[in-house]
Image (cartoon, rainbow, N blue to C red; front, side):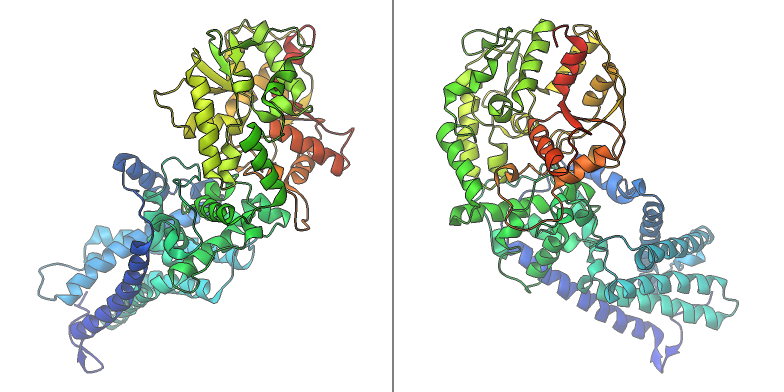
Length: 615
């Protein structure tokens, strides 16, 4: 290959033309990036460079190996190929650029090394094939909320020119053709580089940093603050999510609020955040009605390939709305009851143990004597008459298995999980302190609860002064008791049922297998719903939504969509392991006309039916 920077271009020395194009490209690129950096520097600080080993592991898994992408057929593999094509061509571009800018360097061009040249040819062919798959998906089989914009089309064309120009140069037989292909390739990449910070494909640069600087505990919960409304009131990492957004629409396709017709689009939130960083939108990112639509199920963050953090933005803005008094009336009533009574039902503390009335099983007071298992019962399991039968069933199971357990009785307060995600950080702190103080006065080895919302708060978000005992969900304890032979199946269940993964047990805490193993152990055949495990569809109760009234007309509430999905499998039982799921789905069965065709049963009730003689 002749030196492509030898000679002239339009009468100008070729290497000088390369210098001019490079400086222009880097100038446009650098000036835009610096604008973003200056905006992020004015935002609230946030430490996101701790635990470098864990962050590097995430980077390897989700950037280099594209772990999330490869789960998706065809497009996942195509994206992996495009990513590595990008890495290969970006590396050799800078190599060739340095060689071209400094002709005296005793350095060959990248493609002049046979092994590298062959790899580049292979990745050019594979990359073009992957690009064709991506184009067909975008323009023929377009997923919901994937935008077919001129910007996206231009990016696809630029990538195609980059790959095909290299391939053309490699296959060309004349020196002139090779030289033309080389310059087309270099000018296209330089143009791509200059355009990138202004386009939607900024995520090509930002997403790897988004992964590296992600929250290592992805609970969607920002650090305590007074909330935020304007750009400078958010943290730099919260704003950075907008820059890393690929606008793929996966968050909207998984969001129960958006899919039901509530005025919330996680994708639009990212777009508004990006516009705020660019200075195009300095005010609130979303209107109040959109913010109150969020169910904090974390499906958007789970599905996001770029590890963007939607929930922290929403919760920050909710906090500000709470401070300003812009709160849904029903939600405000629930928060007032939590503050006054310690529960959202407005019941006096002494009523918390009424669920034990008529129960032949002794339920001890853990404040008065040591127990092995401290049972944090939770509000709905304690007060809601629809849930109390499953609470009593669990008490019977624990007694039958000779489990040494007790409760906090009237000293128990709501865990505060949902109040916190509704933006009431101060109330959460009050409830947490009261519960932590009451628990600290007991002697126990384990904490158990049947409420995933309480489970998450106790396990991950409480500030324990002297550490805390391990926290178990009742499905985990039931699995243990059955494995140890302390619970035996007397009447195995017959037939098939399906199981719903609660958001706060599944996505938040990764507990998927224990409930399924328990159901299998009692004889049930579990028919899986299409949306399950990490992709489970929310019941609609989280983030305080269970306390709110619908202020807009929706197509179909999440719980209604979920029970229809369960009924479509041909089963007659939907098993749940969350008190709020039980309430939401029982209501949904009535509104969807599925009464008599589908029943909702809590896990403890099913186990009691199979294992207890009197059940």
